[in-house]
Image (tube, rainbow, N blue to C red; front, side):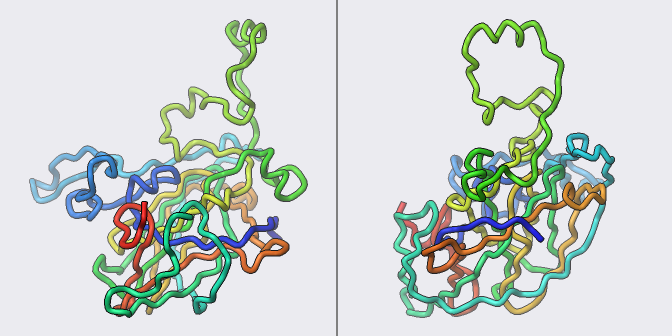
Length: 320
């Protein structure tokens, strides 16, 4: 039975999945030469990975396109993990019809989200209830869709993620310490550490700089700590068929969500040690007292059934 936490009424608009927008949570794997992200303004672009010519000049090899992390040396059991590759065959989710609500979007309060028609009057607004979030505290997790065209207008998948709250804030949400403590990294004290006690510490216990063993990791791949998900800053991205995603170790995310006409098969690459609570941790989202609904993602589609975005870079109605 997963831990539960109360949540306010929040409606969240969709964003396009781009490497820059997703960088806090992990990496987007896409062909930088053909991706629409390559046409964004430079401030909205992540530099493409290095590349070399391969296969006698008939291929371009992009190097280190994602960041894989195995942090199981920090797990309480100390049981080693191995690389695993699974496949998830995901069915389309059921959406419910739009209903008027006093819910406000999390960090997009300046958007007019009640406009539900385009110039031709053919927008369709539906709602997706987010009931559970999970994380894999000691491993990255890469989802690679199979058989989904980038031009497919009738089936897409959603990537829903949330930052991690500080441990103290998490305790306020559920009235007790976070259920999944990540062990502190033990290290020998240097003379510098000992003499540092003579003056105030410049860092709080919840914002200690990364230790040297994590300094070389991509920020999204470093340990996140034991906190619960920050629902007010939850993000929802719509992905194309030519995009894969890697969730950083410990990143709170919804299970993979397919919307549209047909299932999508995903190949999933991660590390695992077969200790249940170390491989996967879940939090159930329950509507809080006085709230009309819980966490809801607004899914707007056009006449062809293609998801339309209203927030972030590439949005069509954003008032930023």
